Length: 482
Ligand SMILES: *Cc1c(COP(=O)(O)O)cnc(C)c1O
Image: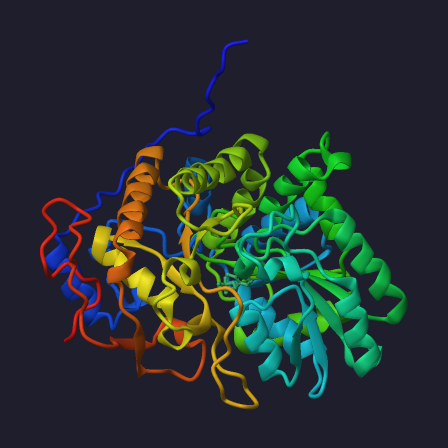
């Protein structure tokens, strides 16, 4: 049979113009942004791969749903539509809407964690861990060792290491472990999936010990696709079936609808235990809004109710992850060091491997993200020591094994041509990588510092000698002395 390419299962109805800037403009923008891509104005970005969070393109059906927003303060019909979607697709009976994922993490942490408790998880996530810590808990990473190795080809690098989990439970006692938070896929490991077999083993370990299993369901749809592709027994199951089997192993979930669910804002806490749900419904009024809107407009609830159903369509999910693989494979072919296997939502550049001349305390991934913007107008973000923050006890910088730059692909937004431009930009930067400088903090905020920190370059600019590019000017360095 002749080879047939597949294409996106949608066509474009509305377009949003984007503008290419000059290198001189971008050098000014990055300096004004304190070398932090989060502080660059969106209009100064050409291709925006900062995040897949809230950046999806909605469908015509979702926009039509927005017009059907029932903006009643209480009992909006859109809440009941969302409840139906969550019950049918995820299987959680009790639904507490929140403005986004961290709102749900806040409620869950406050409800289940007592000061002195310990909360294991398969690699930390920034907001998840912070809410656990603010509630008085201590986070423990129980992910398998392979997750910390950017070159390991393990098919399920997000898996929980049952031995690490058991060692923690033995050490602190099961009564000090209210729940384990299992993230699928694991964002900070590079969008790496968790197998259904592993999640089942976690549930079997936890249930008799009274430890709840809470899912970070943010990218559980994408995880389900990986299970279908890589777990042989699951090959004939639909993504929707696998998602349901995943959730069925858990006691509840926190969800950022801004990822899998194809909306610009929204999240929820899903639970089975009606007594805990009643407490969550009471607490949500304090922090988010009444339990039938949770900080969202009725139209936002409706867009999420529809987006949830679209997110589990097989053709959609194949094209979504297929596009991420397209970019990742082009970079691999060019010899650019990336985290493998390629993840579900992003391609992660291995900044430590690319920039061995920049020491860890000069934040190579932060510097690489800034340099990529100057090179091409492509905006990415750091996932390394800056994101990891400081140890709350010692105040020291945390240095995770992975020092990465994340090229995150928004859903249904960019075309293959955009991915080709990104590929060429990264390759060009890779060839000039010796010109990238380290950075130090000029301003370091207290919480989640990666969002708002400002940096300044360390050392004098390096001058290009080799002429790696024809016509490169002598001041073609990426980080300027200001
Ligand atoms: C984005 C994200 C969250 C937090 O969700 P927000 O909607 O950004 O508040 C939690 N966990 C993971 C894995 C995420 O990627």
